[in-house]
Amino acid sequence: MLVGFGRLFTECLLRAAPELRIIEAGVGKEEMLRRLGEKRPDVVTIDVSAMNGQALDIVRAVAVAAPEVKVIAFGIDPTQETILQWIEAGANGYLPRDASLAELKSTLHHVAAGKMPATPEMAFALFARLAELARAKRRTNVLETLILTPRELDVLRLIAAGLPNHQIATRLSLSFHTVKNHVQNIFKKIDVTRRTEAVERARRQGWLDA
Image (tube, rainbow, N blue to C red; front, side, top):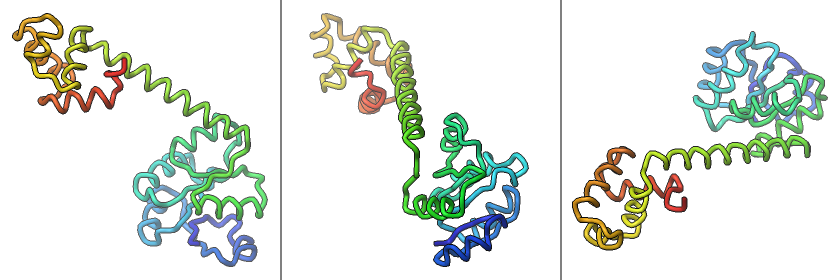
């Protein structure tokens, strides 16, 4: 396994885990990204205290520049709020400052294998955050439907059912021209040009089930 790491623990880690190849990187976003491009390690550990306040930005930059590279944030305050902040930035694992060499080695192997060690408390916090995001998405979808009138939503659902305008007019007891105007208004409001696009957007946003 190829590991990008600062100078801290390097010699001890090499003795404890000879299967690891350590790449020492300099401090700073530019140097980290440059070495990533050269070496493409499996895992990068970022020592939060050694990054001059750039650590979160570096995690985000690594996630964009090399999404296949796993990132471990080392030396963070192990509180739920702080850990979630790093995970949302793109970290795949974390270690507190007082972590042992054995914990570091174990975390490196777990993260490289696509696993993130987590205490039951941390797992609960992650699920709670996911539930919060899901609720927010549902609220957003509901609010977005408010850009369409109830009648426009009726028309959109019938479009999704495959009905042409004249059949929609019959079903809703409207004139053909009224239905045509509703369809044009729907297209304009949700920024589409075709019926298939309108249906795809409605399904993606959950409007057809609202």
